[in-house]
Amino acid sequence: MTTGRAPRAGAAARLLGPALLAGALATATGCGGGSGDSTAARTPSPPLSPSPSPASSSASPEELCTRIVAHWSREALDGTTYGDYQSMGLSNGQYDILRTVVDAARAAKKTQGADAADELIDREAREGCADRYRYGGPDEGPWQ
Image 1 (cartoon, rainbow, N blue to C red):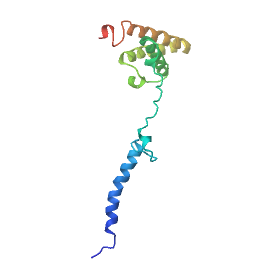
Image 2: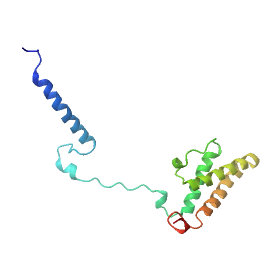
Image 3: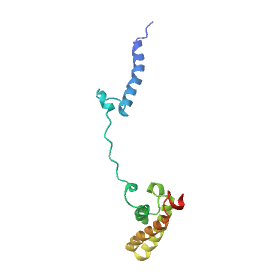
Image 4: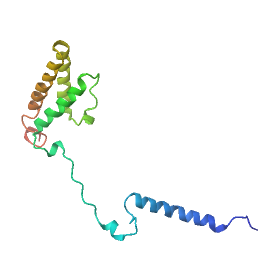
């Protein structure tokens, strides 16, 4: 009795499908040789130069705190919410400084104008961060 289809075609498709998928995954993840050159998979790419980060600069933790708190204070000044401190790259203590600065800047903006609020942000962020880092950061001083 024959069913009219080739018995080997289904078996070949079942075996070939996973092999093609494995090959595609190996190529997509960089595990395959790609062009048939066996040295291509073994030759490492030159490392990318690291992008500059605030931590690698010569600024002190206090200066970095002042910059980031002042930046996000200006962003939050006209908004109705402060946002998530972690998405801003702030610690909990820096976020406390930010909230204090923004509250004071909003009051100053209402009574004295935008320029006064901008000056207040710089001054209050600098003072708040100086207080926070007066005795060192998390790895030094009384933080230990």
